[in-house]
Amino acid sequence: MERKQSFFSALKEEVVRGLSPARSRAKSPARSSSPMGSLLRRKKSWTSPDPLIVRSGSLRPAGEALAPLMEGPDPEASRDGEGGRKEGWVGIQHWMKGQILSRAPSVSSSACSKRSDLRLLLGVMGAPLAPVHVSAIDPLPHLSIKDTPIETSSAQYILQQFTAASGGLKLQSSIRNAYAMGKLKMVASEFETATKVMKNKNPSRATETGGFVLWQMMPDMWYVELAVGGSKVHAGCNGKLVWRHTPWLGAHAAKGPVRPLRRALQGLDPRTTASMFADAKCIGEKQINGEECFILKLCADPQTLKARSEGPAEIIRHVLFGYFSQRTGLLVHMEDSHLTRIQSNGGDAVYWETTINSFLEDYRPVEGVMIAHSGRSVVTLFRFGEMAMSHTKTRMEEVWTIEEVVFNVPGLSMDCFIPPADIRCGSIGEACELPRGERGKGMAGSHRSKVAALEKPQDNVDNIIWRVEV
Image (cartoon, rainbow, N blue to C red; front, side, top):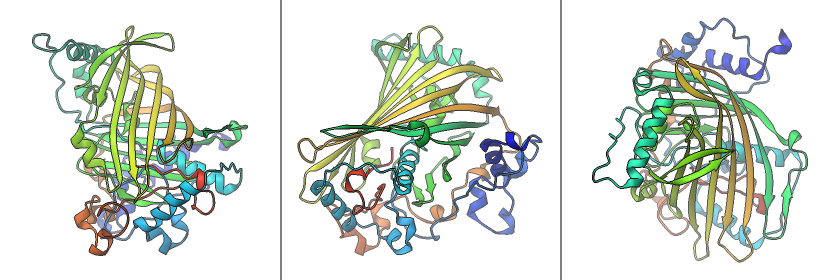
């Protein structure tokens, strides 16, 4: 029986021992026990935790001003405390110069390279967000044909069919909260430059395995914890603030409006998915894996893009496509792409295009609601713009399966979604919260932004991936 204790039984026990944010937020007697912990102790089948599971509790001191959440890891900042706090644009300038001066690709199989790959995987694929703010409690638009463009009325009809195929609006409206647990595999499979393509020669050895748990509660609250390769990323939303914590960046708040977790849209939350596409337009049809599908397109509005931008990092567009099966009415494929422009001081702009393609499979009913129990995602990071023939492309893949889904978990409360204390005392990255000395530093603007790099510039310039939170 001991051999059968999987990673996920240990992950479940982690939930029992205090997986929720309340566990790491405070040590006062009032918060000494996690509501989720007492809730889940009723599960008799859960076993003792694996001693190899590590837990990240390296939160920043309370009251520290927070930079906006950026998608990706910090350049080994967690190794030395002083270096981990220097987030001004001076260091970014040196890195940008290094990017331009050095273009020689380097591939290493060392432990440092493996750790960097893991950080890239978790940073980009761990907890990305949806393009726009929606609330699952908002009613869907009524199907209207009169004085409505055909693209809009067609999209409304497709969403009506999707809601009915997923279990019906009445059943979905009765769900107050939800819990999902699954396992996954991640791998960085390919790196491409203007002159060559380097593929992972042994993807099985480079694959990182792990699992995740996801909690959701109406309205607009969620918490996810993902543990892969000995590292743990957790993120959450209390309905007013979205935050994320990683071992290498600590705790950070997301800039811009509150948005749903993209992973929940991957076949786990049909009600939020329907709300996400409520303002979409039907742009045509396409065959996905032999299935004829309608295509719905949703674009983030300029106000949302501006609110998510910071300093020289400007998010130009974020588009989401949903492919709904004409046969079943269910969502079988989802693609979103966003483009970020990074302007250096006196130099050429660098563009980052991130594309995530997710395929949803194995739909099965859970208490009457259709849930996708497996799927895979392919992520492409494309950098271009600073000089001719200098583009790079990184390809990553994830495969996941859902082990357990439960609706209306007794005892789940709002206390399980309270952000860590340092985030609640900090800001959401507004420039007015920064010290005056920091406002005048750096490149092209008066803001400070958190940078995420895979490796130190002097170690391997070409492998640095700079990502703004998606």
